[in-house]
Length: 585
Ligand code: SER
Image (cartoon, rainbow, N blue to C red; front, top):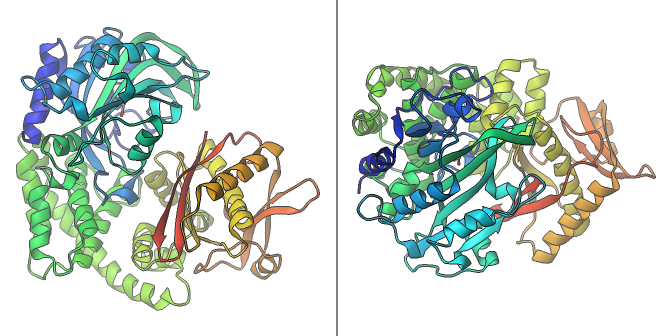
């Protein structure tokens, strides 16, 4: 079954069940300045989920174009994409859990009307309950009609509570996962299930949100006027499953592009090829919805995406004279024009080419400077301000060479440089929402506690090699030459949580670089610092430093209130460098 057929089947299935079919809204949201792009099918429907009557009734379905750039660094693995189509059905105070679950199951498994997926490869998660809503036994009871109870898992709000941001409609959800393995994984305990999800052995294919609550400033404030349903299923992932593939790039929308790159690249790399395939498609849809490359907001992101694709095409060494970029764009245009005719309206190739030419000039001088700086320490700030070298490109080049860039410091330097619009867009690019939000700020402080705990548990020779913080999680890279044991991870978590609970003050001091070095403040290997630096200290009651680090902030004023710290993932990132992703809940 092709992806076009899957899309059509989905819309037909819900039309037959009384849903009005909506065309996809533009990728750029109208009247919603809180997000740069539609990141879910529900986004254009927020006013209706909040209670306004919809002119087409209270049952709706669509295939909505979405762009998510928060996970851009994961693009290149088997399933992350910056652009995707989200299939979704909605009930505005009409049907609720029973029909939503039943239809999700029917569509996934029915051979006649749906996708005919194998029910024996299906797993389901439901909300385990917290102070906002009870454990969702109701959803379990409904699911038990279709899947064995031991394939239904309770998970916390972190996994099974959905909201588009800090404000608006939200609710507990029930997610469906599919196992694409050659030999089915079969029954799994709760722990085995969580581990299989962690390593990507199973893939989320649909989310049914029971949207009856409202959030304000990140807190659930009560119930909405009606019980709504909001579901979402990624067309690319579903296509990969239905077509029996193990990664999205083998599905029909990408496969010809991947072959084209493989055929022509002198220096083929699967990851780089996937990034090109992903980014060119995203650029195409953004341009079709009226975005043009610029230094602000949506335009800034388009610029980054085009430039990253161009850099990757260069790394793949696609021979001169092969108009490969255009061939890829042509494939996507032909593939999608019947469904999204807007891609025929704009002169996409010219916009792309103009940006590519601009970047080629920057690229040549920037690459030279990067290589020159490489042995003595890369200065991403200088590369950005003097050479117009985007930070993501510097990070990318650094990553290829096993070096990591201090993103926090870079952001602080850019802020100081008073280039506020660009720095703001850069923050949105990585973090999804404004990056001085409370969650991001809390994670900044947790990041410092984590480094101090790693040094305490693993040894003082551990130092930071890179970092990145979004509003969902923190990421730290540090030098260490082996995998952490479970005991070590637990000890690190326990230490961080103990510091949080004891409540320590966090204060900022500015001082000359030499003084900061003298007091032994943590700095990052391979990074150049300005003459006057900002140091954040976390001290215990006796005034002894738990942590002192070079950092631009922002931070909370005291550690109490950070919540519970948890390590989500620990992995190798380069020789002798480990990476931890962690979150607060
Ligand atoms: N809004 C939910 C999601 O994006 C369901 O569509 O997962």
